Length: 302
Image (cartoon, rainbow, N blue to C red; front, side):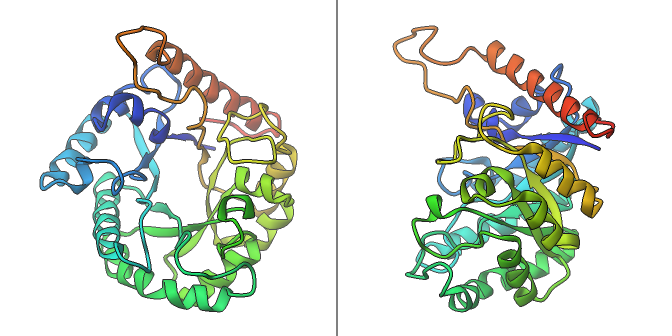
């Protein structure tokens, strides 16, 4: 099974230099990567939102091909979907989908509407889905043109504070069914599910063929921390058994961007921010952790 990780864990350390961010993974063990466009709308002067954004993506494609990195997944921008600002969000997501096409990425994860409107969980599900439909339907032509699946992600009530968001496998299935297009699917975020107190195995079986991607990280069961495995309360055996039950064939993708997180260096003090060499060592250890997790279940990691 391919072991992948998100560039969200390193991009803040290197600004928005996509090529440098990719270069960082040399020597870590990771060949398969998840491209994070998550902060495209919120980060000033993000390359995806500049006029020369295609050139920036082509540069990453060229470097990746030369160095043997393969992009297997992406995260679309966090943005408004149903309120003021949704037009900017739509433009960012359409660009990210085209970028996925350039990079050869088939599966891109998205957060459906988050904190917009007064849709309460679970009673306002139908109204929430209807409110989200126009945005997602506007993505379909680009999805078809560039061969990209858009995957809805689960969250947890701690994050949403009572507002509606898909939490369970059944929630995701119903929303995917309502969107009614074969290129919509699901990504299971194990950290969010851990906070929600769900059985990964049961939820993965519920998702079945709709599951196209996973986000793997750990937490204390109380808040979203995005820690490395075994630094929290996650039942990874339950998760692994669920993957095996459904014959999951996608990448084993880490989203550990909450460990040794970036802080801007202050007053030229060398230890006010994590040294890049230490961050590199932590990502190498993350890859070795993935190999060990797969090997424990007789699965070959790569």
